[in-house]
Length: 336
Image 1 (cartoon, rainbow, N blue to C red):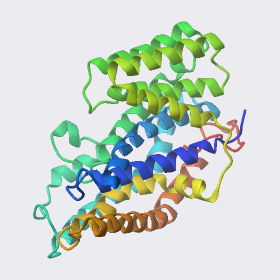
Image 2: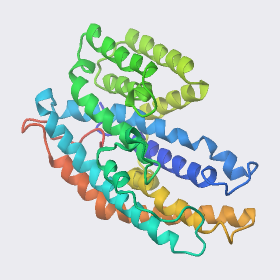
Image 3: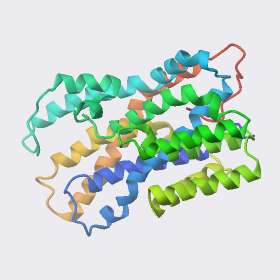
Image 4: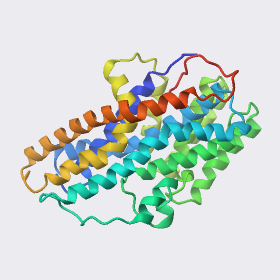
């Protein structure tokens, strides 16, 4: 078993960049539909599904590595809270501040600034979608899905990790069947992507024999074809293939893998805001393409310092919290 999957750094970076460039080129009416940038990056929203697959693998693997059991439920939540919440909540505050500052500019295009304190408060529990309030940062809806997944996996981990196929298979089937009855606001609507990651987790722990690999892989493809389209099938197959590749690290893969969460959080309030402010004076297509590149590079710089100052300290503290003193202290295969 490899000690670290460097392929995940490649995928994290790729997913964050893809979503970022998708929003920069397709979110606003900034480029014409025939623009090559807009066309090239239009599939970038599938980066979200890549992140879901990665979480499906990383979270249960880290739990297994740390000898997690249901009595450690609150320790698990503590680790997740410290790792994810401070960067997220600070970004909520940052989005609010930037919303106000942006409206002061004569180049601003959009609604006047107004604070809805209920809207802001609901971010704390990822409740905006359920309470009919918009997100201050539109990527936050995916964090709400991830948070639901954390709660769920902490409860069903003993089932999806069980050696007996009569236990773990029905558990995963139930997880996916619920997708037919839940809307986009629930984790179950994206269960097949998390399931793909969970199956990879079982593969890395040698918990799948050849028959199970074949049957479950075929079931995932059939489900995706029925519930989604061939595009999602391609995303899942290619993502799984890359995860299994014995890739070596590079400076770029490590860099973008590290800042991927910060880039994902900040590209909306920082990069997209730059593009919004340039709408009035960047009236030619080449100039607007240049501004997209500038916004992208600027967001990367800001994300790097956000990672160093805010995200990395939280990540380090989270990794120091162990489920038990007897937990394996080797370097983790995956950085959750």
